[in-house]
Image (tube, rainbow, N blue to C red; front, side):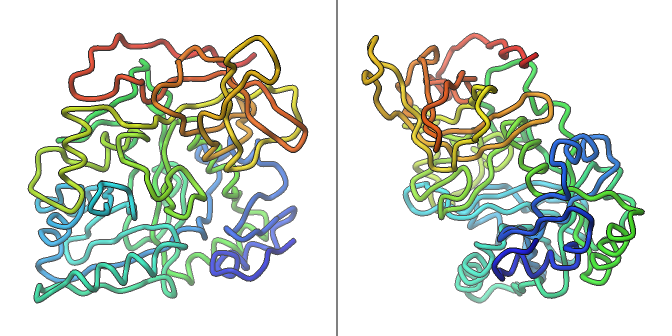
Length: 380
């Protein structure tokens, strides 16, 4: 089964011959069993072709100090092979772009959402001024493959990015108070491979010698780890007004003590003097319902005893069916939404109950003094 022709679907075309494969607008969706694929990914047996992501390269001796000066991350001293991530913010501190970053000593490799790659490349090119940097779109020559560090480490690659989530980097700050963090055992890396090597991987998958997994499995593991994913168009966990604080992205993508960059004043003010206006939560959805909510579905809170006594407090940003936790979702809700509020989410079959797990607490900020919270038990 194939999707309408999009760049991601076209990049995933070699995997269409895998038994059970479904290709959609974001690439390879699954190969028959997303739940099994999740387990194989987590165990290091499967690899995931990430056609929805692509690569930009930045060469030149000024590349790291230049990126340091225009993004949220401290990159001037980034060592070859070291992995981090950055955000490009607008002047009001809202997230415009996100990129995973690894440098090989000669060039910086940026893994980005394919839907945002052209816009980010154009913005970076405009920001070069007279510095010795060269921005190139490598989407025609390279692909991104995800999996455990050991699984992708076996591939021939130009560079490998190791996900720092959910560790708190130097200069970062973690808002999630749950101990242990559900992403603590997350083992995720992304290899940048040449197109020919990706096609060889697809041939092995078609032949049955290499298990592969689709993006539904990848997203389920991400959502369970409370890991945000950015797309300013609203397809994932950010929209045109998302601040890094709202999705707990200060921990891995922001350096709070580096020099000035666009949006830095808002980042500092919200963290040091206030609280983010919205907050990311994980929702444990009623497992008895067969239909999952759509991204963008309204999240409502009960305000009284009647069925009509509810008000919309947020919106679903990611949704998945996890192999252990069942139906789960990430959502952005108003900061003032009580942490013990009775929540529901709209679906095509009606509203379903949603148990809230606090990711970013209402009191989030540098001055907050909130006890660490236990995580809800996983469903039986």
